[in-house]
Length: 133
Image 1 (cartoon, rainbow, N blue to C red):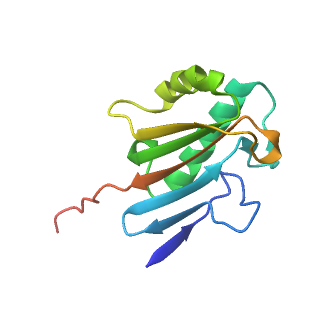
Image 2: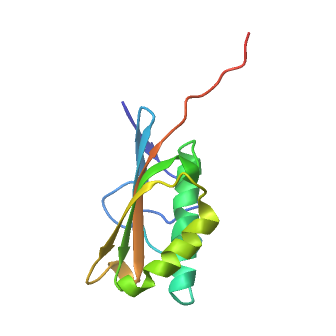
């Protein structure tokens, strides 16, 4: 059975999709662009600010699903300028510790709202441990 994940701590869906869908212990995260959840506008600043906002949005949806960024097993990064990939690596190192998720980096011609980055991913939630009765 699937569960739709939604949180006000990440941008609301701006189309016909959900922020994430949970099936069993697997969570499929929809693409996040650098929208500020409270205003639904693109974060001000350069590509660094955009990448940080995307990771913050992914973190919020991951937490709403009962997980955390460390539970991401596959991350897809879409960039309109692949020369920004070293910046993604640097910032990703602030959000993740080894072992890192599998990842793809894809250069694209354009993204929604003319942003420079979008990311989506798949989480595998850990087994929950229940206290002994």
